[in-house]
Amino acid sequence: MFCSALFYRKYLISAVVMKYQAVLAHRMMPAFRVVYNKHTLTLEDLSTLDDQNWLNDQVMNMYGELIMESAQHKVHFFNSFFHRQLMTKGYEGVKRWTKKVDLFSKALLLIPIHLEIHWCLVTADTAGKRIHLYDSQGIVFKEAAENVLRYIHTEAKERKQTAFQNGWKIIPQQTNENDCGVFVLEYCRCLALGKPLQFSQGDMPTVRKRIYRELCECKLQD
Image (cartoon, rainbow, N blue to C red; front, side, top):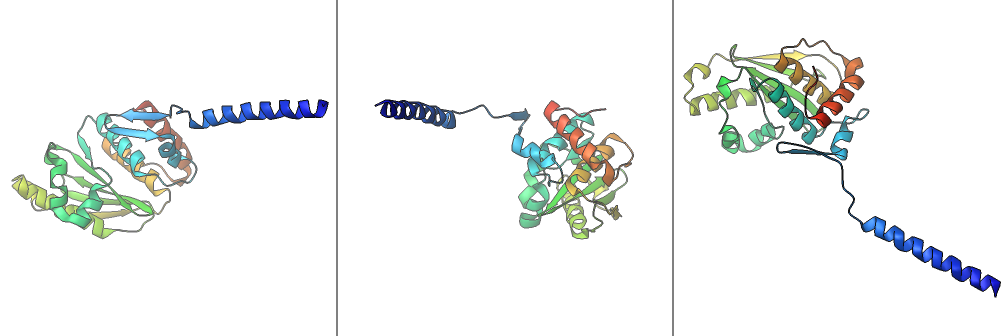
């Protein structure tokens, strides 16, 4: 009799616990989000800054927005999907991407290139008419720079900017390092804010943590 009562009591307690666990499992818990303009970052996005993880497009694009704000919009950061769209659909596929942007009034154009498992950066110095390629692994993706050059020529023609239709040169640059996505963001940050490119592989853990804080605070640090 005692054993039966004890068993029944344990059964009731177990049933209550299971019911409580089920409620918790189905309850919508508020998820952590960082929202800035049209960008939203989740903890999963921010986790791409941990250890040796590859950065995703969401982190790249929101940080690019912060760079433009910090540089007082003297530079233009292209969405990381821009080059992919340019390669697959040509100029017509990206023609409207800069409908509200006067590219040739900017001092610097920043074009992150995402090639499956690798990031690199193409920049266009509008005053000097120079296109630079920044690749942390030293793999010169000249085709990416040539795609950007063709785009600029076509954009200049469409906007009737005759001064920018010729005279451009491609200048590749290599540094032979890793953490390609983090390097791209640090290239962009330094170039946009006029800071020297004085960082190396050993700085990457610190740079990752700083970028994480800046994204959460929606503002670049000095």
